[in-house]
Length: 229
Image 1 (cartoon, rainbow, N blue to C red):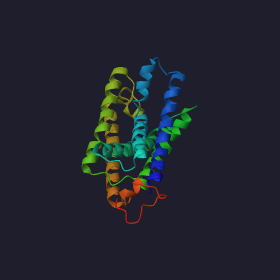
Image 2: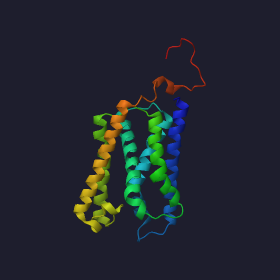
Image 3: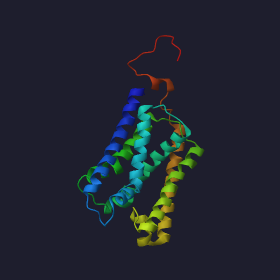
Image 4: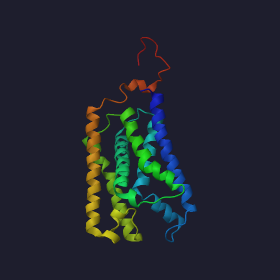
């Protein structure tokens, strides 16, 4: 897989992420709120959704990889794993728990499709096709848990103040603390299992790209015979 193709695939995922986020940001002030709230509070609420944060994370990581498909580093490895697992959790949880009760209309039909179906599928597919991998180990997987835990802490701290929670299965005021704790634990276990699956797959799947040097030239440009790289 050449640099041009890898950049194209990562760039396509990034473009879809930024498109979806841009629509949400632009449409929000034009949508009547369900309850009185300042515009700032509504934007804070928007970016408190796990779905939005997952799409943002995929967008950032995919943009970095589109600029340099061979980019590496401990932080990027953690963020890459987070982006894959978080967007996978987003898709799975939505289709298993939320789809039947989640009604959307207008521009949100597009963003809902992108966020919960198209981007999760494409992000995982691009990882399978162009990686980069291997990039994941036990330490990376453990560090990747930090970001979701911070989101959980923020969700309950914010909820305690404003009395609003982003998802029904986390709404303490509606289902109680015990049920919320069980649901949170279930999502956490699912996150860890998916992180373990990605880590295990990276050990058996072929490295992508197969040769690091191929990422720094296109197929159309042949290296001089005998040239040292």
